Amino acid sequence: MTEAFSAKFIRVIDANRSIKDELAAAIQMQSTRRRISVTDLINPRKAFFSRTHPEVPPSADRAQAMLAGTGFHNEFEHAVSTEEFAEQLVEYEGIVGKIDIYEDLPVELKTTRSLRPGLESIYTQYVDQLGAYAVMTGRMGGHLLLYGRGEFGRPPELRAFQVEFKDLPGIGTEMLRRRDLLRHALETGDPTGLPRCMWLGRCEYQELCGCESAPEIGPLVGASSVSIHPDEQLETLFAGRLQMGKEQLSGFRFYHLAFPRKAAFGLLDDGDDAAPTTQDRLGQLNRRGFFRALDDVLYRGMPGAFTSVPVRVGKLADRVRLCRGVPTILKSSKARDFIERKRLPAERPWNVDTLAFQCALLGAETGRLVLYYEVIPENKFMVYDVMFSDLPAVRAELERRLHLLESGAPPAELPACPAWMAKNCPYRDRCGCGDAA
Image (cartoon, rainbow, N blue to C red; front, side):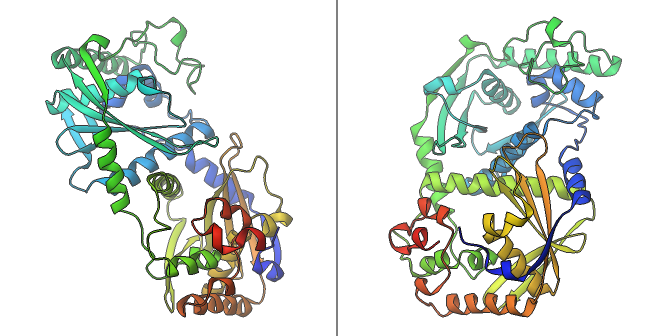
């Protein structure tokens, strides 16, 4: 395993407990909704307790799942649609809803860890939510998009379904009934009349909610009043839009300096053999969406703590995030144990080098690496404060890599990428990184 270039310039690595605790608290903060939403109608009992007991945070794993879903939604919507049609707010009889994509018919996007075969992948609550949007828009149907994130070795997958509703008045009547039940419960502080929700036994409010004795909740949309069919045409349409939205290399960012050989191949590529597949694009949107959603939560949960400053050197144009004035990068890890401080330059060399380059450009001796551990339950964050020496030498290496990239030097002259990247790299048959790293 190759250590970070900057390892020889590290003076000390400390674990910052104060920032770690702030981040953990920020991600568990919840905002209280005031208006009744379509989501509230799907599980009104849980909606009641989320409003009346804001002091009960979701579990760290649940918060992570919500961030992943929210982030992917945002990225996907803006990759395949436009501001005119993405995230459209609709209102109906005191109920509000936000449709993921609404051009001609409402489109509801759902994310899950994996997709089951055929119609088995469609849960009742998916149809209920789309049915509510059909009522609110006066449309007799809509589309369901299901995204399987591709965890546990499975590839990402996107499926589309056409949904037709036969009884909009009946759906509307049930929506109003649930709205009135939830309103009464909130006004009286008594959830007794609210039905049991789908999260029985898996909910953060299970010590409070009394779901065991609550009446069963039936579907908002009856099985006999809906028809669902796979929609391959819609799948093809959105796959095409994803390809149209693929990112092109324009200038350089810190990512290209951390993985310079891959960036060099990208400059030489003719655009055909390295074109991302639909699965590649879905994976990109999933990763980017999660981090943007996490960023948003942390910015709101730690007001004033985060700022960013632009940096420019030659064709490098990027921004450095500051957390309380310290250059900070936020990354995730699927490691099952926290990485020891002394092992950080060997386990995460690309992160340490990126941090060193940012510190060198800003003249800051200390940088901060925040690792979010995805598979460790509850205690998700580890904050490493890294102090560097000889910042001019670090900057010289940054400028050397940048000059090689700007001059179109052969990829072999640039440092190899980590070996783990070779498995999914479009240049793996010619880059030599797997062996070199």
